[in-house]
Length: 220
Length: 229
Image (cartoon, rainbow over all chains, first blue to last red; front, side, top):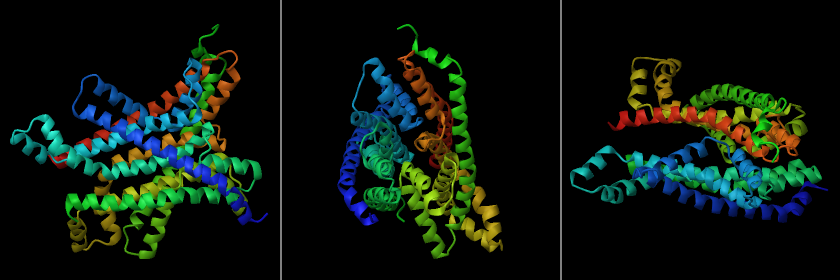
């Protein structure tokens, strides 16, 4: 069989994998942003106990690999009667990992707001809440946009690791097909194309965002 | 339960085997990092040169390695090197090569970013006192860039170490692969052993990466304080 036929025949399967990759990424990213935001707010307002717990979570999550986190969720937790199906494991794992990355992104933005701004706010008598609402957050969120966008790309790429717990996303689809038909060139080609379709536009958007934020901050 | 799960670690040579696997992981990460960081610095410097063609090629190299997930890169090299190029490498060598090239790509961007953020007057002053290009980089730009890029470089190192967890996918006998074997071999006797085996692997990765990322964070904070007063 020619390469073109191989590719055509595998198209429906890749389409399914593609959609699943997009869907899992989407849910994972939304979840990560929510978890990350909560952690950052707990840190920013120095909430007792919870802020501390959030900091510990962030360090554990961002200093261990997703693959090990997934193995834990998928293989180790069921031993204690806590069982999730593969896709749920993937989503929970991705949010567990992504939450800390997003939180670091938000923190970076908040920290990036210049001290003069904060002190000026204090000087005109703003309360801590007002300071956050009118000075730090609006500027901080803008500054954190490039980091968040980079995290989004990172998390989409990380979904390729879901293949280890047999979620039929893009990578898993390709590896399965290679295992069955030994046509590695064609399937790897499809795999690369699949990720390129998702990630090239995003990476272009990221570059533009970075330039815009830079322009907004430094004017060049 | 007749046996507590944690004893799986002390059964036979299990613990020694796990550390052996960790050593393989560290070895691959270390060689890849040394090669990748050196290559990355060279490519990063080249990317600040005027030559347009060179810059486009290096940019494409960076984007390719940045856009394709590392899992996919591993399989690309794993399947395509022997088949299309007749190059039969061991899985360990393939992994080292992929990680080195990936590290180089990311490092080139860090180095380039640091070099172009050295203030323009430094470069111009250097040229004004008649430094050659080599001298300019050697004495003016690179020393200043190093302090700017160090936290990002350390973060890259922690990322590479975390990414070594993917080695098991191309059947390198890394710590996770060994862990899986230990779990499978002892599953009958220690049903909860899986928790402890993956638990210790989790702790191993954390113990390596946490100090590094803490160091990077501290340096970043100090720089921010210096810049912001």
